[in-house]
Image 1 (cartoon, rainbow, N blue to C red):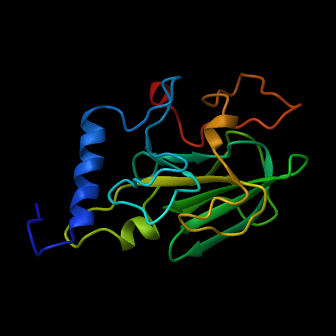
Image 2 (image 1 turned 120 degrees about the vertical axis):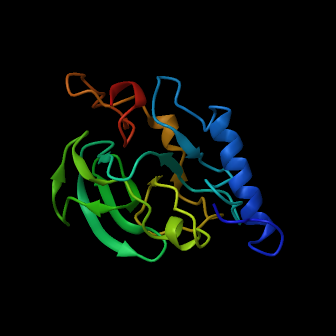
Length: 200
């Protein structure tokens, strides 16, 4: 284990690791009320998984294991599949009829291409730590696997502090994906983009 004492890494980074560890030990890395997945950082939060943010978070960061499936949170069309220094391997889904887009970042790999039609619950990639989680991890440490999940009314990229046109995905989430369940079609409804802990 790397020494993180004075002079090794910055105070904000040490504080972020301590806060993330404390939340995890308390079992309150914000789990969804339906026994859902671990949420490392909520919408509007200033706390990231291992650091303090420079502004309010325009998304939710879900925790998991490298290689866990990332699921389409609603039916849609792949607007973009890409690699970016901050987002890492990412996918943007367009949800026509509702004027909404979902962005999935930090995946180990993507499993869809531009123009593909996807169904709710379809595997669109594998959870990872590409992009910012790896770039911000101190030397000698493993990055924290996570999925950055963003809901917006347009597909433009955003940084922390830029909430314009974004929404809290949990306000539209109806629970964990189940293949035998019927979901609303008269309103925009999401399911968690990763498997729920009680359904793995």
